[in-house]
Structure formats: structure tokens, C-alpha cells
Image 1 (cartoon, each protein chain N blue to C red):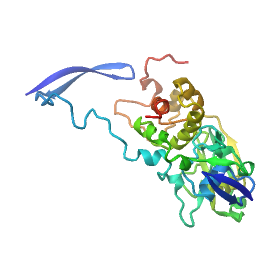
Image 2: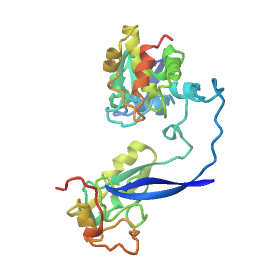
Image 3: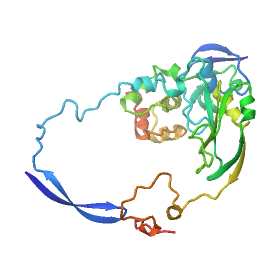
Image 4: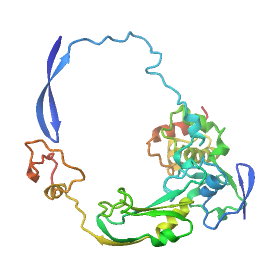
Length: 145
Length: 183
């Protein structure tokens, strides 16, 4: 049994050893906003925050996050970054976008006025196969509108 | 009134002169001034939905009784499946089905690239399906991959029937190439 908090709610999950955090979120809790693309920690689509720090949920085992606070895109639905991404037209297919926003939210929490360089550095683990990078950068730099 | 325009056509480094007929009718120009739609930014109708992770992608769909498939892919660039044994996979309790090259034309007995689909299993979860792939036993005959296009033409190794014009022959020298240097 694993106890964890997701977006402010407490959960107790009974999952087999080897269950990833991404599987637990998507399959057990139905939080499908967290996406799995590569499934092996290269692409960043599955990024969630663990106590405010971005982690790759597809290679994080559920049993290692007991007692921690997980923040997913569902918990950031009203974050100004969501509107910033839409304003800047920073998504095409949108599959990587939840992970992008989760990473960006952690960045602007610690660095409210990030430079382009800081955005590129902090978001380098989030791949976008549509190639929306220039606008993603633009969206995060101008996140407060 | 129609007129003739001379232009050039380039195919793989060969230039040919081309004459085309153009209708003379002049297009009516838009009046000057800002446009109502053209040239103006438009908000995406599904932007927020996607950015918030609320949009439903195929991987987010879960139906009652739905099975998940996993595909066994060729680890070799070119090989022949000498023997494939699906028995163990089929006998695994959580596996609902396993198929190989004999069961489906998409699954290849002679894969011609690394990653070509060879067999597939269906199970109750994606994880279980992936696990079951390990229970498929394949005996491979590893073959030399064909990497040179000219050699491919010489051996008439085509993925489809070649569409040739009547004057073209299948000899390798008859296939025009661009001017890029050849190894």
C-alpha cells in the first residue's frame, strides 16, 4: 500500500511492485493528462512535480514516492502558463504540452522572470516532435501575459 | 487569351526545357486595407483543452474488455524466421492471443529492416502484453542486408512492381542519378 498526495488529494494505492508513477496516475487514478510517449525517460512528456521538482513519472516507481506530494497538469489547470501557451500558439498536436507546462511551472516558481537561456536550460528535457520550441520559449518567457 | 511560358524542369540533376500554357486572365486583386480574417492571429479552439491535458488521445481511451497488443520486432536488418514457437506465449494465462507471420500478412517471415513486425500478442494490459513477448521463441537465420540502391536494382529487389516507361530498361546504368559523388 502506497500513500501519496496528488494535486492536494490523499490517495492510498495498492499496486504491484514495478508499477510506475505514470501508470498509477493514468490507470489507477484516471489522470490521463500526464502523457507517456517514449516510456523510457528521454522525452519528458510524462513530467510531473514531486514536491515541486520535475521528475519523469514513466521511470519513477510508485513505491519510491510514498508520502510525497505529486503535482500533475490537472493540478496546474488554472496556472497562467496554460493561457500563455495558447496565446503564443506554442503547441501543435499538444501531446508534449502537459509535460512542458509542468516543467515550466517549476521553473517560474523559482525564477519568476526567466531569461530565454534559463528557459532553454530548464526545459531541455522536454522534447516536442512538432518542433514548437521557439513559441514554447516565447510562452514561458512571457508567461505572465 | 492564352500565352506560352518557357520554364525549366529539374529531375535528379537533369534539366529539361518545358513550355506551359497560361491563361491570360488577370486575377482580381483584393482591395487595400486590413483584412477581417487573413493576416490576423486566430486562437486555437482546442488549445486550452490540449494544454490542460483534457484532450483525449488514442492512448487515453479505455474501453470495457479492451485488450492491449505488443509487437515482436526484428532485431536484425535482414533475416529469415526459420522457426517461431508461439505455444508458450499462447499458454500464458493472461495472454488472449498470439499471432505470427502465418496468421497476418503484416507480420513478416523475412523482415527487411530492424524493427519490422514479426509477431504480436494481446493481453489485458500493455505491461502483460510486453512481458509475453519474451515467451515467443524465434530461430533466426541472419542474412546480409541489401544497402546499395544500384545493387538492389541489379537484383531486381523491389518492394513493389517498378513502374517503368517503355524505353527504360532494368539495367542499373539506365537509372539516372543526381550528381552527388558516389562512394
